[in-house]
Amino acid sequence: MSKRFSLSAIGHDQPGIVSAVTEILFQSGCNIEDSAMTILWGQFAMLLVVTPNDSTDLDRLRSEFARVSQELHLQLSLSELEEARKPEPKEAGVPYVVSVYGADHPGIVSRTTGYLAERQINITDLSTRVIQAKGPVYIMLLEVEAPRALTEQQIKEELFALSQELKVDISVRRLESELL
Image (tube, rainbow, N blue to C red):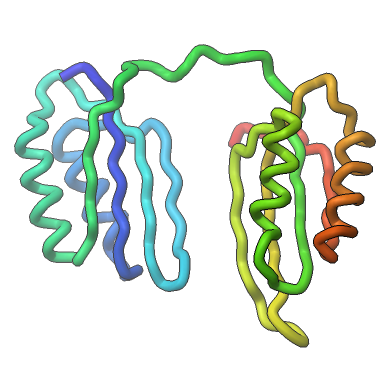
């Protein structure tokens, strides 16, 4: 088996999910190349990109995941990826962090991400939370990659106009390049 595959797991958060899933991968000779894991409202979600070795038995892997899925009450999905390599890199954009804070109401995510999409600004990470202060406060943090043709000032000015419409605070700052 030479292709990479994706593995997703969703279920009620509990200790041991990551350990159980990664132990199966390790015992099967698989390498985890990329991962994202989070907890949302008590639900654990994991997405992995995994490379098997030449002796990995996909049927055995599916059987082991079915067992763990039943034991831990998880929805597990294992899918072969079409491409055996990452997509060819395109011209690197400029990385920014966009922060949105305000009273919770419908449309914040849709309008903000719509603005970004219209300007070909790619979202590389997005997380949201509602916290309780004097009322529900919505927080959205985005890591984005903007085309080099857009200046930081242009992005800030246009997002300021959007923040006025949405009645939220939106800030933008350049993200320094890091390893992760």
